[in-house]
Amino acid sequence: MAMLVVLIGLGTWQVQRLHWKQDAIARLTHAEANDPTPLTAHPAPYSKVVAQGRLRDDLSVLYGAEVRETPTGPKLGAHTIVPLEREHAPTLLVDLGWVPLLTNTPRERPTDPVNLTGFVHPPEDRGWFSATDNAAERHFYTLDPMAIGAALRLTNIEPYVLVVLGPKSASLWPEPAHRMPRPANNHLAYAITWYGLAVALVAVFLVYARKGNPHA
Image (cartoon, rainbow, N blue to C red; front, side, top):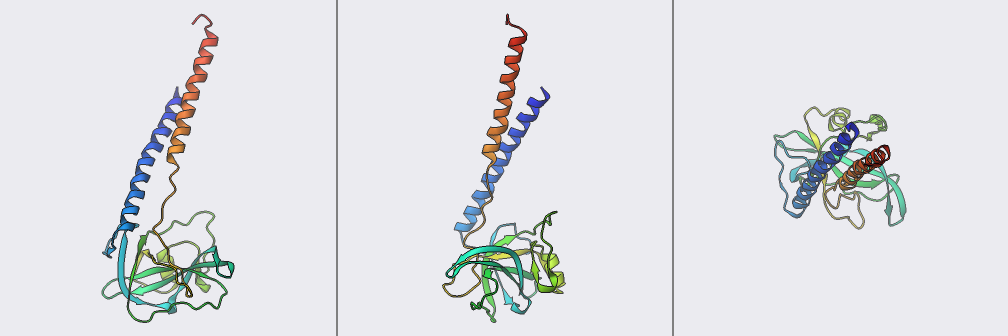
C-alpha cells in the first residue's frame, strides 16, 4: 500500500511539473515573439530586454567549451563574455556569442555605445563535476557573474548575464544566440511511467490475492 501511494505521488508530482514547464515554455515563446523591454533593476529570469552601454572588450573572457560546425569544418569554441559599462547602473556581463578558438577570423569590436537585445540568464550553480575555472587565462566553465567579475576586479556587477540575441554574421564572430532557450519537457513520459508502475503494482497484488484465495 505504501509503495502504491509513493508511485501515485511521484506521478502527480510529474503532472504538476508538466504544467509548470508548459507555462514556462509558453512565456518564453511569448517573450521571443514580442519586442524587448528596457532592462530594469530587477529583471525576471529569461525576460527579453534591451540594454545600453559601452562594451569593455579589453576585459573579455571565455565561457564554456563547445564544438560547432563552421564554413571550414567543425571547430572547438567558447562563448565571449564582455562587461557592458552603463551610466548610473552596475556593470552588466554580456554573452556576445560563440567564437572558434585558435582562429584568425575577425571579430566585431564595437567601441561606441551600443544597444543590445537579449535575454536575462540567471547564474549557474557550480556542480560536483564542473570543470575548474582558469581565471588567469580568463576561461570560465560555470556561468557565475560574481566569480567572473571578481577575476576582472569589477566591484559593482549585476548578478546575472545578458545573452545577446541576433542573426549570425557571414564573416565575423561572435555568433549570438538565435532564439531563447527551451527547457526539456519529458514530464508527461515520467508521469505515465509512474502511473503505469502503480497500475502494474495493483495488477500484481490482485493476481496474488486471487491465487491466495482460489474461491474468490
